[in-house]
Length: 222
Ligand code: GRF
Image (tube, rainbow, N blue to C red; front, side, top):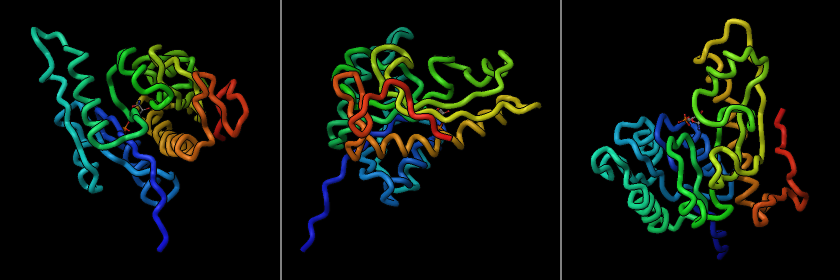
């Protein structure tokens, strides 16, 4: 009898449509990533990603941020403890932020050292934060793109793993540019997770290596 290898387990955190979550789940089920989706955690009850995850037969946990507010203020430790509860209950090893629209606290990050990845729709360090497509268009950039990076306590500032650039074309608006970036996201996010899940990518105490070599700059995907 052949034993099934133990697969790494992913907790995917989403707030929106969940197209990256779907791309990652597909890559897992097709064997392109040696991992399985343990749970999809969403902080917004109406988010499209919830139904998409259910349609794929994935476990879903909704941690509604609204339930952790008193007088309009979010009790972040309690909110993050609830998220951690689902991560642990589902035995997840890696935390994959896929359009999760909240900044995680330093405490949360410290509980998962080198085990949290994020995808950010810009060529970091350009345009950390929100509205990246509009900012690239307003600046007249001819190139835009997307970055997968390790998450640290610094917003969109952890070590970058892989980037993909897309052209900004004449006549582009936020919708057309964001669609082009999304297509690149669905390619490079599964790649980065594959590297981490297979051990090719190592956190190495905050100085990541890929195939044993220092990752001083992110890999540029054509
Ligand atoms: C993506 O553009 C990602 O880069 C950003 O949020 C968006 C999520 O899109 N962090 P989706 O929900 O995966 O479709």
